[in-house]
Length: 107
Length: 107
Image (cartoon, rainbow over all chains, first blue to last red; front, side):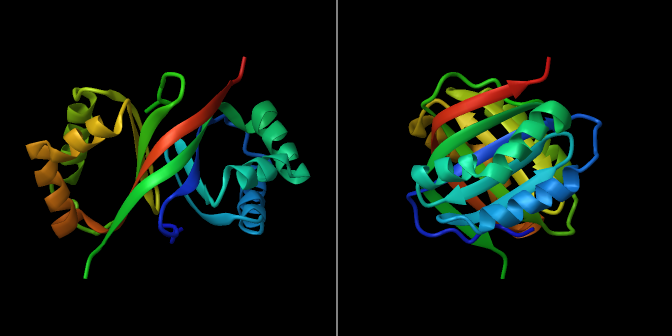
């Protein structure tokens, strides 16, 4: 997992912060599959993810419309449903417009 | 670390995604101190953080002005400098306006 190479702002970010249950069955496969599928959607710009106590996944998109479209994709809806019934005890999703960004890379 | 209890949108988010070097000296103390100090700044609304391969820290704020003010706080500037010289091999900071959010909590 690397830092996403996003274009110049403005673009959009979906911050998904979650706390897992102890149910592991099917989780890793589904999470991998959702990242793969997201990457194939129109308007996808990149994704970053980290987990320890909390999980934070940020996906980047070119428009609010393409974020909405991805939310409605059938397999993604099934994953969301399984998330609520099995894998997450709590989550919060925030839809954001990225206004500015800046980077650092050591030489 | 819990999911931040943020107010109704709009509000602002700073997504800080980083890759660490192997230098650990002083890092954990400074990271803790910066979270404590951020929480005392005007306009701070919450913070979420996770690290495995990547680190992602998202802080939430009431305005762009208060984000700028926090960036300029002297101790924070020193921490940013140490981050570039010692602790991070790369990072990206994205300043965002949170447009919508929604939550789930299991019963």
